[in-house]
Image 1 (cartoon, helix red, strand yellow):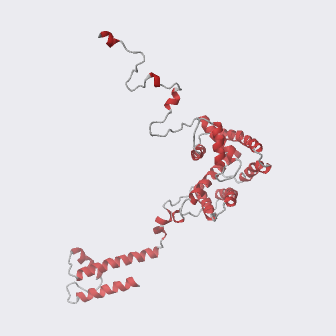
Image 2: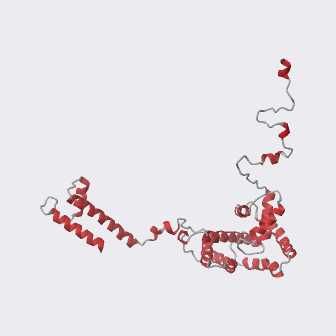
Length: 325
């Protein structure tokens, strides 16, 4: 009996929840830790190298157009070539790139280095895919034209800062136009008038060439949504406050003051008519009496005089005529 208690099989697990020895995977422990739980989705841990490859794919794909969303499939394909072991959707990759550019994950020097690495390779890939020379030369010409307005302070520094500012402008414009197209007209936010400062004019001049791509690609009557999205993007870039409630719930603030005063007076007159009718019917509660005295304030009418019912009827008729007028 003592030998049975002291003898432990070497292959038995040390804990009841441990799997048997024959079911333990031979893969690396890191892969086992990153496996998703039952019924849940695994979240990707973005490393520094993955962020760099995402920006490389973005710069290569984005160099072929000024705006729009046509670069996303090519960016997704390029990222899959750089990171074949990472599974990510096209939308998630675009959101990740937007987060990297806005959160200052990389400094200006690193972003410029990644952009310079990606742009020549983008031209070579375009030539290998039998693209026309005009398409290969278009990013340089468009970039030179787009970098003309200075959107940042001169202390920030040169072409790199301008390029980063233009990337943010393009991203904001894409989001604004997409949001405008998917939002009904009555739910669009109200735009405020902006000051005609030098910076605001420079932003508008930078947005004008970007709108050409959207207007040429639009085959339906959606020019109003494109222009509204551009105006919304300008307001977001300069930091103007917008009413997020929309036009449906924000109509009360747009009603003119004189109309509001008239509606309030009509409501008070109707409430007063109801109190006078209640008093005429025999209701003598203190609240009703106070209202009747207020209705005849400034006159010689007393509640105890014999013709008070006639006075009540005349007062009610007078209030009704005021409401009808």
